[in-house]
Amino acid sequence: MIALANPARFAALARRLSPWLIGATAVLFAAGLWFALVASPADYQQGETVRIMYVHVPAAWLSLMAWTLMSLASLGVLVWRHPLADVAAEAAAPLGAAFTFLALVTGSLWGKPMWGAWWVWDARLTSELVLFLMYLGVIALRGALDEPARASRLVAVLTLVGFVNIPIVKFSVDWWNTLHQGESVFRMGGSTIDSSMLIPLFLCAVAFTLLFFTLWLVGMRTALIQRRLRGLRLRAAAEGAPGVSTAIEAT
Amino acid sequence: MSLSATHLGFVLAAYGAAAAVVLALVLWTALRHRAEARALAAMEKRLGRGGEAPR
Image (cartoon, rainbow over all chains, first blue to last red):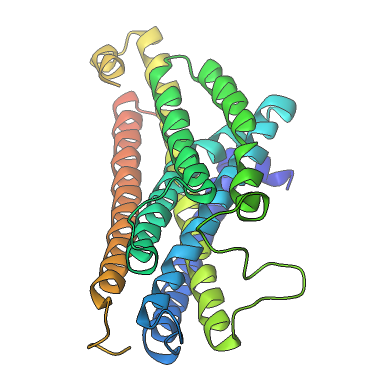
């Protein structure tokens, strides 16, 4: 772990890991989709609509996981000043936003045939929408500030404050009466989902999670390149290299 | 999956949305990485600096 604190070593390791992650993600997606669309049975009440679960639930899980990872990274920024912590938080935010958006859209597409409504101001749906707006908020805040060190600290504080919403999303179905169904996978007394649907769900969840980590690693490498590029541009501008000052103004 | 099932359109729309989001994320991540790596390589070439750039 200490060795990985060096950004160059981290970038090299991430580059070596990427092909394996891409391969594993593709295989798991193929298996997950086959189980989700072909091998798993229709639900006795919901019919074929239950198949939306195999994309909706992994996306919703990832929306929570991404913010949790960003919160851990934010601790790394504020407490340990780890060189990769801010890079990790920055790269996770757009991925988290995308998966939260997907959870909201697929939830809406599941809600209309089952509840008769595209949207209800139910505690689970509303807290998930708040999570999406929070993702947009941290992305916008980082983009709005010119000074990277200040942006990093402010985004870390906002992320940690926003972490309070994660248990609200998770336990909203237990704390309030919601139209959204209660917890059915990770619950006391075991899952209420039959293994013929639980196995495809886990396959799809692992596939989505591997996709997240693959894209996260590439995003972190990109953020490292951007930092190196910015450093070089600033140094070059200070040394008076031709054509560099306009490049800085353009970024 | 039965192709004559009711609400099939909702299932297809959900998988279509998932495919679109995943594809957009993959393309955005890959293209952005390539563009930044090229910009870094060009900057290092312009400044005449050697060394292994992060890729």
